[in-house]
Amino acid sequence: MFKATKLVHFRDAADADARLRCADGLHEAAAAAGARRVLVAPTLDGVRNGGDLLVHLQFDDEDRWRAAEGEVAAVLGNSAVAHVDGVEYRGEAAGTTEPRTSGGVYRTLLLRVDPDASDAAVERFEADLLRMPRYVPAIRSWQLSRVLRAEGASAWTHVWEQEFADLDALTGPYLLHPVHWAHVDRWFDPECPEIIVRDRVCHSFCEFEGSVL
Image (cartoon, rainbow, N blue to C red):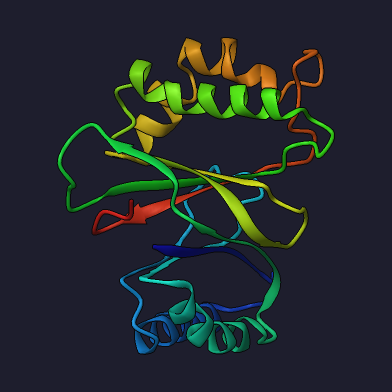
């Protein structure tokens, strides 16, 4: 499975019609190239550098994405779009705690690990993220992947994705869980010696109607 995620930031002057045309164009481009899954949805209140439109596309292989890439880029090149943060990757470490459901909230976190961090530190960081679902039952499905190609404000290295039943499950039981702020956050906190994520992150989420992961 080959994936592309893009966080689209619209210009303030872009009206509702321009935003809708962009979303429709992205749907059409992905569908025409045979995307297995297409999620194009407005982000919800509370995102951090998360854009106005979250685009998550899945293809059977990289060639199918390449067939869609030019048209997707053309849609995103219109005057309504101010900036795009994006990543391309293959889904790697994944899991689920319950059967796939028909709806909920999808969350993605784009981050950049310090290139000077040791391999051992990066592996411990990844292991800590993947350990979270053991302690946070609000996470229904998850996937952690290394980025193959990045665009935007940073050279993103990782994508950390989850599905939740609703927004409250993300903003409450997940973000406020002790394992999150007392253990995992040390990798992000400039006051902790273990910090390896130094750039800003993109914390974005939206509603979905069919399971994404």
